[in-house]
Every structure is written in structure tokens, then in C-alpha cells.
Length: 100
Picture 1: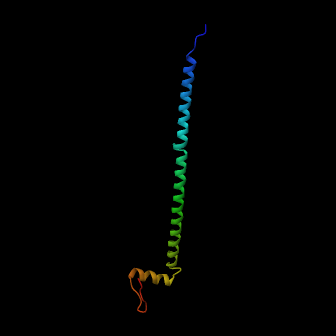
Picture 2: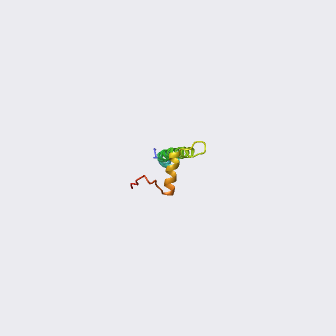
Picture 3: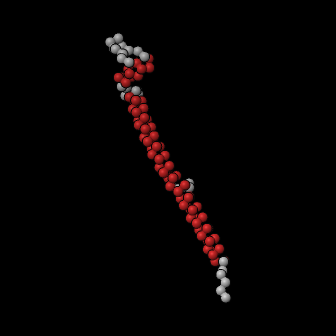
């Protein structure tokens, strides 16, 4: 007589649940984990922001270096010196008109 066997069906169901759980875990980790897709997009956006800030700071440093060189002892730009002195002291010449 042929009797139905329940053990293989339970074993197959257990195997499918474990395989499905592992598949879900690895898919979730690939999308939202520390090295997942979302983290990569976030890191790329942060890289672009920091690159733009670095470029802005480099330009500002170059501008400051240029002004410092122009006011140094070896190379003195009299127009720049006059402009800075007027700005700091708040004075004008008698032949000038100030427009605000």
C-alpha cells in the first residue's frame, strides 16, 4: 500500500522559506545597506558638494594671495593700497563725490 509522505513537503517548504529569507536579506542589504545603492547615491552627492566647496575655497585663497602679493614690500600696488586705506579709514579726497 502506498502511504503519503509528509516529510519531503515540510522539508521543501522549510528550504523555500530559508532561501526566500536569505534572498530578501541580501536584496535589502544591496539597496539600503552601508555599501548599498542609496548610500552610494548619497556619497556621490556629498562628493559633488564638497568638490564645489573646495573649488570655491581655492578661488578665494587665490584672490587673497593676489591681494597679499600686491600689498607686499616687493610689489606695491599704490591704487590697491589707496583703496584699502580709504575703505578702512573711511575718508575721501576733496575732489571726490561719494554715491551710496
